[in-house]
Amino acid sequence: MELMVSPLVFISDVILLLVIGYAAFYALRRINRYEEPLNRFLVVTAFSLLLASIGRLMDVADDFAANPESFALLEGALYFFSIVGVTYGIINYIRSVERRIFPLSSGEIRDGNLPPGGFLYLGERDEIFEFLGSCKIPALVVTRSPWKYKEFCDSAQTLWITQASGSGVGPTKLHVILDSAVKFLQSGGRLVVIDCLEVLILYNDFHSVFRFLSTLRDYAVEAGSTVLLIVDQSTVGDRELMMLKREFAPVKDLKELLRTSS
Image (cartoon, rainbow, N blue to C red; front, side):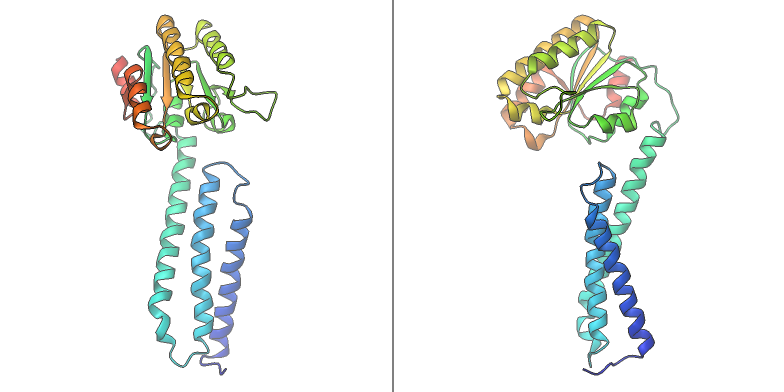
């Protein structure tokens, strides 16, 4: 094969291929090492850089092609999606970090008044961090990822649902979870967040989980406190979701709880 471009152009293409390829490999090796939002950023970045690496490889091949324009459209598409992916990853990661540093974008400090009872939230999970940051009240989060709440909401207590550690509670021990939450409410706790409903349903039948949640809601009403379910609709069937909505009032925006209490 004959080189159809100057040696300087060819060397530049090879260097760019090696740099982008190494960056893609570097990001791939670190996927699943970290929690969100960093892991999501690494996934998007690695995929985008892989697309760019393919584009650069085609550019190097074009340096030997008599008709380098034959793959121009495909190369352009690869670079387009690569740039879009990296841009999305950076913006999304910056927004996540900003939520951590500035939990209230408006600068307003809420008084933390919440209506008693049970509520069900179907929105973005990340919004719970901002919500807890805006409500300066004693809160207990029942979750599979306690480190996330320690990172974003260091004032919230957490109850780790896990089978792999003695420092947590197994997902089948609903009575232990209930006892811990009730003691928290009776000692002055104002908010209990259930952030692992899908895991509880996975390890127990739905009706057992529903009875557990209904009982917890009754204790919260008696204590003048609030229970908030974070629900992923993809993990709950329509019938089960309707049952939950009968006991827990749906809210589309967590700030509705604060408005309701005013």
